[in-house]
Image (cartoon, rainbow, N blue to C red; front, side):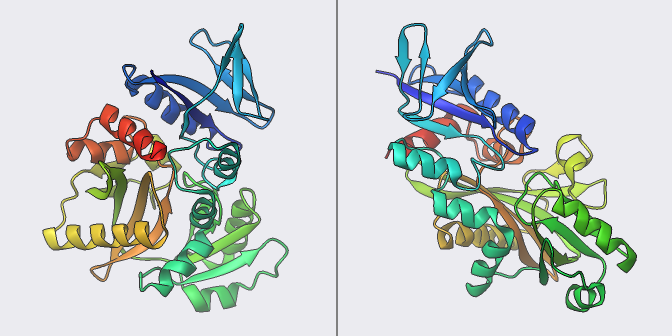
Length: 324
């Protein structure tokens, strides 16, 4: 009997539309011989099952079911493609855990930890993983530009602590621009992280659960036309993504090793994508994404293809892993 799979997409953040694209890719490629996929749109106002005719059927949040005509739809698992809250920060995971429904991303505590850049970096630094120098600010704190610059230097990056897709991020070159950059980040989150600039080649490494074990995928090098890998570079074609990365075998193995270490130290599962910069020829960790983009053009599917893994195989294995 086929398993009913809810593909959760959308969310409550500015990444809503990007998540819908990821969810539609999963819906398109999921193996219909094994699974019965359903689109489930998660929005602030309500949650809906959206059928092939575009009609919306309300999700009953008390038991995560939907009714189409006289048929009650129960789900065997949830394929989590939500970027941002509530699918990437642990809220959806916690809800589904209470419902007893497995889902494909990491568990709720690990999701909350990795979504919080400041906390995630603090944990990984304790395990010897190299990162940029950083400075933390909460909304309402007094902004001390001289103190910030003495700690992280210029140029530096100002980021919303809990946001994705490069929303709320600025590269700051002058002290006079710090306040505006911090205010921009506060539009996305009430916590900000300011990081020192790391000069070097930027790479991305996917780590996935595949055929019963964690597997590091081929490395992607990211060359942005802009100042950094911002929204336009990620989604509007203003970057060059090279998979496999044209780096040495030694560098490839080292950054894959670091990505696997992040995966295991943080007790992750499902799909992850870690970002690093080779600074002084050593990989420095930037962040880990536990619900990465899954469109055909996204980095993790590119890496899977380079490893000889089709999207159908990739998505099937993710569901099998969650059901186990």
